[in-house]
Image (cartoon, rainbow, N blue to C red; front, side, top):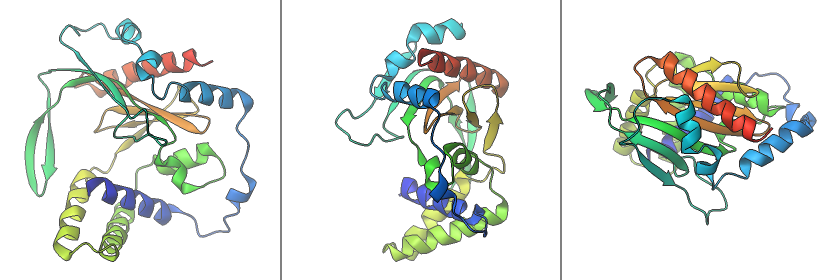
Length: 246
């Protein structure tokens, strides 16, 4: 339910953010330059080999903290024709002393935050849903911070869609309230320069999404209370991935 609603809200936000002008952009899409196409294909070739794309020795080259208790978690579906952002995850996790506050159903709670380093996704994520002229334009339109008015309109539209799909009033309200809690922050994304064609840091979830041609990959880096340290580590690891596919 949560995933379905978030997809609906994302789609609604994108439609709210579109200009009302003539949109012939999809008819004159620009071709991806050969070098980017090659890099995209190379990175995509590691879709079921994420541990080879970002091996432990490369992680430890840039992260010098104690990883002696880190456990490798690698989930993917090799049989799937279309890989899933929530399923395809390769990471090293271990305990930390950090926690973060989360608000769920009107209640605030402290949630333990483990250390995490790895890759969350390689492929074409939801950013292409906007269907703008180029992948770069799609990326920038998707990974942006929506206004309060846009969010409210998106929640309303998503709720109406859930009702059309047959969900009752109580279920729809519960799901919508949950989505409001999850997207309560005004600033969700932070633009990051110096890596890929474009990159965006998801502030709460601690991962860097990097655009290469028509695909993205996501670097998990949650090892510090200082977010600049997390971002610096994520950029270094992202550059290692890009260098592997020059």
